Length: 627
Image 1: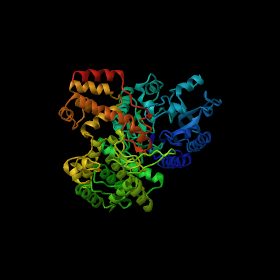
Image 2: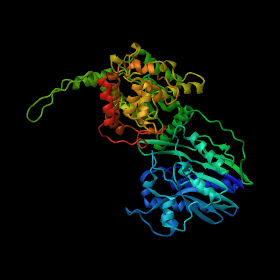
Image 3: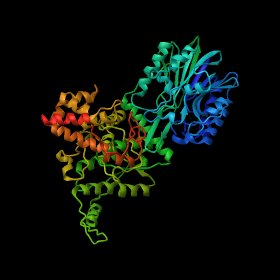
Image 4: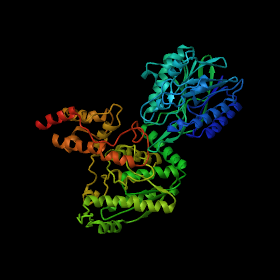
């Protein structure tokens, strides 16, 4: 038997387009003599399309096009693909939930020999960006509603029993129900997992280990088929990377598709074993390579979906805007990128020269728009204003040095970049990294603004790693070397003069790892954990989690001479993380997700006051009393 999986690009919310994509794949497979074609989960509707699943006529369209696709099946050709459907279509019995909505299911459609069978997803993820129980009922619910329903029965295609599972079903060791094991016990000879899973750093390695273990333990070949595409919910952009793969009955990897690449991969099933028609040519990439690929794919496709071609980037000569410029130039072409340096008296010749050099290295457009005059105009217009109320009482408005820092940031974004982008027929970017985003170290309506935060899910150390990777990949200097050794600075006052070694208040080797522990760890650290490890003298080791890092115990001791200064710093940033940082993130542009806790729809939060637990306050009091 000849089997093919097709790693396709699925367009979320467009069943008509997806049907045509799948139909063309089916026609090609039949022409090539394929007996079984496997397509991704939700191949017809697309996945993660929010409450679009609550529109009944949309579901009806999905069912219509799915039924049209099943007509491609013949005596010698079968296909398996994912689609949403009503429970009523499956059972022939009308059924609504307690809220009156029609019950819907995430299903695999198995079209073979003029018959169509349906497999319901067993495990519905309800974590991170996933919330399938909001929309669908699972396999067990169907069984309870239809006693005759067979939950794990395999399907006979060409005399071979195929077990069909859907995405989360492959992670069954985390649940009481074990779909892979149960399906194998029911007599499946080959196990197939349809998926539509977005990229996350490290996920592919983890999945490969899990599916290899399934194949080895069950002594059955396993095929994993994932789709490509882009999805967003207005706050977080998810890149679906494909990375489809297959393992033989020994658990050996026999095929692995590249990330973000459409591809057909053919196999021969003989004597119960699966053989790839082409020798395996796959090398696992580093995390930085994967992140780079995901960001390039995300930028390119997000702009295409939005109908955008040109981008204006505020190029400060700092590492964040430098990385953004390099990524956009690669993703959409240097001819579509315009760098704008906006100096004042606080900007050093060093950073200005870096911005100019970057533009030359990239070959993109460049200009300079000094903003000192406009900032001074704002100061003249606002400073000393004396508003009055109805009773004739008067107050005086005075702009502090801090206020003027914000005036500069807003002038750059909301005035200069916005005007240039509009005139040039483009948009301007948000260059904030995840470390700054965590504590709101950015000016609202200034550097918080922009149409997309391409690097908003990158900690500062990852920003540096990506810059080095870009140079290494190019085999020449794209990112100016000077930016990698310069102290990060907003250059908004004399206190941030980079040529004097001054800059941001964040000590990035420490605060990077601290914020990551508080925000991104799967089992997030608490303030109590942080303080306890500080007292025990192993905080650096705790925060590094065995990873190579610039954070050391000596750095922490040098930065904080005593417990009081450590606690003051810890609470300062925590209050911003849970306070003003949230207010700014709510109004910030969408972020391309690469980690397991991207801000927006992945890491969910409310604009509430910071809270310190009793346990932390007790430990703090004890520490300070003994200090």
